Length: 230
Image (cartoon, rainbow, N blue to C red; front, side, top):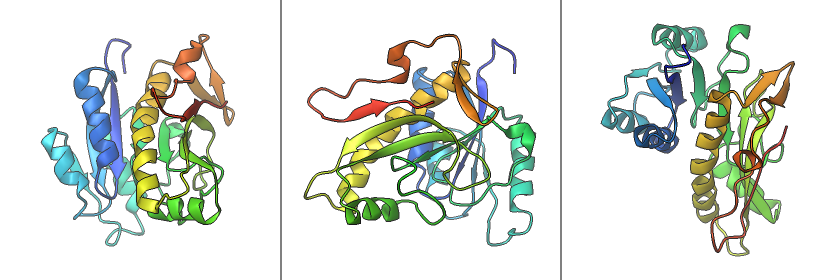
């Protein structure tokens, strides 16, 4: 990728594709200098396929039920064919076994404040239900680099959401998703601009990014908190 060309993203998803749609909107609006070169679904009936096609994003499917043994290899071959620079997991429920050349260029977003309520089997409403059962007063979302363990990679950025006494998994999920729509483009932008990188398993800041690039103020009238970790 030359400095004058937008980064080529490969977005992987398994479900409805709302995160994919959010990123596609950011790209279309010019607020995220990137191109979604390919979107890959692990399920042939995923709703995200139609969303990707509405944005004219090249879309592929690797049905994990039919390709369990070589699933990762097939996905990676499609990413290479699309000349992808960064892999972006967007509600992707399958384990991706990627070689070392991708280290520091694979991102994920999780709907909790990791390390709480993360790991294999924690996704979607399962996460929000666990937050409520634990009687947590704060939840949120986390953008992190992906490593070999589920939801264990170094954290790039987090946004927090207060848990209301009358919250349900659905109501909490909706508020957390609103913060995800801010957090993922923010984190991606920092990475694509070279302000944040992964070195020796740790997140490092480069070029002295402005404080407001890392910590975004809450929306007016809200008590939500944004923070970045290194």
